[in-house]
Each structure stands twice: as C-alpha cells, then as structure tokens.
Amino acid sequence: MKMNAPKKAVLVIMLTALFLAALLLCVCAGSVKVPLGESLTILKNGLFGGPKPEGMNASIVLSLRLPRVLCAALMGAALSLCGVVMQGLLRNPLADGSTLGISTGAALGAALSIVLGISIPGLPIAGSAAMAMVFSFGSLVLILALAWGIDRSFATQNIILIGVVFTMLASSLLSILITFSGERLRSITYWTMGSLTGKNYEQAAVLLGGLLLFGTPLMLLSRELNAFAVGEENALHVGVPVRRVKLTVMICASALIGICVSIGGSIAFVGLIIPHMVRLAAGPNHRTLLPLSAFAGAVFLMLADLAARSVLSPLELPIGVVTSLIGAVTFIVIFYRSRKGGVR
Image (cartoon, rainbow, N blue to C red):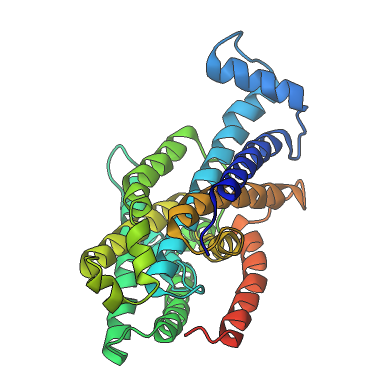
C-alpha cells in the first residue's frame, strides 16, 4: 500500500503534535506536578535565555525531568528504527532486538563489564557502552550463523526460534553473573529491567550522537529495504548490494541497541510494537515507515516512562516492565495474525 501525500502530511502533523504534547506532559507530570504555564516559562528561560529559573520546580523540570524525557525520546526512536530495519531485512513482523535476543546479549555485555570492572579512564559509562555494543553485534552474528548452519535459506522462523533460545541462554548467564555479583547486584539488576532514573544531558547527547551516526545510514536504506520485501534474489536482480545492506543493517542496528542498553538497560518490545502499529496506519513503504516509526517510538517510550514513574507513585516501576507488559500482548496478537495470514 502506497500512502498518498495528504495522508502522509496528516500523519506527520499528528505525530509532531503528539510528540510535543507528550514531551510537555512528561515534563509537567509526575510525583510532583508542575503547572503547564510554569513549565513552559521554565523551559523558555532555561533553554532560550531570560531570567535564570530558580526554585524547586525549576530544578525538577530542567535538571531531572527534561534530560530523562529526552533520553526516553531518543531511545524510543532508536529502538523503533532498529525494529523496522530488522523486520524489513528478515521479512518478518516478529523480528526486533528483544525477540532476537540482541538486547539481552547487550545487557549481558554491560553486566559483565560491571562485574569485571571494565571502564575507560575519564569516561565511566564508556566501558559498559562498548561491551554492550560488542555483545549486541556478536549476538546478532551468532544467531545468523546458527540459522545459516541449520538452513542456508535463512528461514525467518528459524531465526526467530534461535533468537528465543539465545535469549534464554543469555538470561541464564545473566542470572549466574547476578549470583556472583555481590555488592554489584543492584547495578546488574538495573540492566536487566531497564530504567531511566537519573539520566542527564551527557547521556542524552550520547544517544543523539549514536542516533545520528548509526541511524542516518539506516534511514537511507528505504529503497533497499523495499526491495528486500519481495525477496533477496529479486533485490539482487534490481541492483541492491545485498551483502553490503545486510552488513550495514547488522552493524548499525546492533550498535544502536548496544548504546541504548548501556544507558537505559534492557527495554524490550519497543522495536516490535511501534513498527507494527505504524505499518498498519501508513503502509509498508520504508520511505515513510522509517521516519514515522522513529517519531512514534519516541512518543511511546516517553509515555511508557511517564507511566513507570506515575502509576505507583512515589514508587517507580522499571520501564522495561511497562514495555514488556504491553509488548507481550502485542507479540501474541502479531504472531497470531502472522500465522493466520500465512506469513513465513
């Protein structure tokens, strides 16, 4: 289905308005509610110049909530984008970083760096970020290698099944690390459940840099991913460099997932839920599907984070719990529809 220009314009306007509304809502709402007018004044003066905002509300908005909301938006966009390209590459709506085990592999790498005390001088987060990126890419390579060994045609059901098995293996290894973690137990548990507590502008800058560096090449692959929709052989016949596209997708997606996991822990199902919903609304054309999914992913994770810190206030749920609850139901619906529709 090709989306016409008016429908595309309406979707862009709706998502932009929804993004701004969600950002303002997440900045205002929480255990301490800050009125909308006051929040707008604080943001205007704090970000664009003016009288320096003072007081508790100004500190809450600028120092606590705004960097956290920005991290949620950037992570949501990155994870959703990774889900779109992996689903396009594997031609299966069930594929994403969590269902294939890549997120769990990245969490395993980050947890291992904590246990072993791996760090880079002057960049305390860089050690866990590097390990998460290496393990996320290694997880994807291992899964694809096993799928290749079973069936040279890269059957998508085999890849999904191997991903599920790999997730169980990585989770078991994480449990072993937790057993021997001692005083580092809380830090490792954080990686396995996901949380955006205490995020700062530096981490938001890292996410933005990662999204620009690794997300831009993915955004430019819309034509190639559209060609993959009719099969690799057909894509090759129309001039798509299949191997180069696969390698680009694997490197960029695994790097983005690794960066997200290194900062926010393992946040599952974002890349599964959002692309599916956007595909239903906008169609399968990756030219529109990629940017719209990134927008929608940002909105979704901002609202999920708001729910995580508001539903049981003053207690805070791990954001991974919220996304997993939603994602588990969505996964069942998608799987049922896929099998019923004959998707292989």
